[in-house]
Image (cartoon, rainbow, N blue to C red; front, side, top):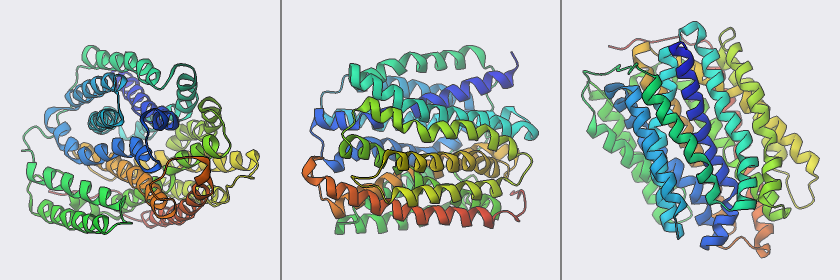
Length: 458
């Protein structure tokens, strides 16, 4: 089998199972909250802590992957992910489980960067969009099947069965990496590691995102401001660094910067939707996790269909035009979801989810192609890290925004019927904010259409 095909198989399997565990666990959050006695705020951290870890470690993992090799990074990330998933099975309280989620996020940060960079490195520019589309399909296939499979496993066998089912496949990915892929793809072998930049970035993003989730308190405001200052220091350091952990000079390219901003706002606007709809189905409508998982299938199933189509189209049509069209549909879906209440008919919810799936299915592959195609080949690990960073920061802040709205509207309370009206109000407010963010993503995508394809930096 050709190397390109093997790489694509491994990368797509990796994309599938990294997303699967995240999305499947999301459906089981009400069960986890009940078993471990989590409040409405703490249960959101089951998802948020995972993505916070990914956000913190993604930028450093980009440079580490380029220096030591993409294959080694994939092996390291897979090993960490497997061990932390096994440990999660044996969790006896919420603290242990949340620590396992944190470690899982560290493993996934390496997998996200290295798998996408491997695909870009293995395929020619003429075939890159198609390959990225197939790889992204693995993400959407996981997103579509994980609510159904996760809901089924959780309903019949408990939440631990989700991890038990996934671990053998994660081991298979590790075996394929070791035995079938011989190329290492060391693109920055002579480049020293920017430890100072890595530490400052990680500290800054930690303070900013954690503070953002607590903006209803003075402590949160202080941490957010300090986080922004530290991130500003990070940018200043990287501009002076000969071999920066993340070359911020790439943001001088309007195509690169606008596509990254579009990705950030898109994920910020859309990621919390699954949690909002899941809570609506399980708490407001009273469905079990299995039924909720089946209904949650709608949006990602549309994404699975659209991702490879939009990926192929992005090789022929300006990808940022396609991305703008996608987020327009996303804005429509959020406008509809902002109307959800106890009497909303199910058909209305399903139409909103179809629009959501159509929008993000059109957006993701072209947006990724725009970012990866705007840097020189040698810098693909950096661009891949940028793609992953925008995604996970957007996802983490999306859940942080939902948690923040919960804190303002509901307070720190258990998810019981007494507070369901406040849950509905919180969800409506969040969707309205997200609709505005979708509009920002449309604008950002349009800005980069006429920009230069690539800038070279020395």
